[in-house]
Image (cartoon, rainbow, N blue to C red; front, side, top):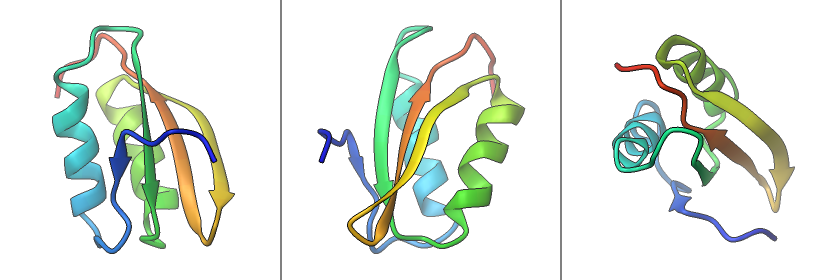
Length: 78
């Protein structure tokens, strides 16, 4: 499995997205973060958050019973 920046397994909505949002604040535009979550709603929440905030979901896949996301920071503010 790829290295994970945010291990949000065991956290339910909205905590995975809130953790992603907070960590993205410290990433330069164009930088990427990875997150692993087992929250079933994350498959909707993470892409929606990224779309609304101007970020990009570069990769989303199932890994070991959880969902792996790679997110690229955009220039958008939230």
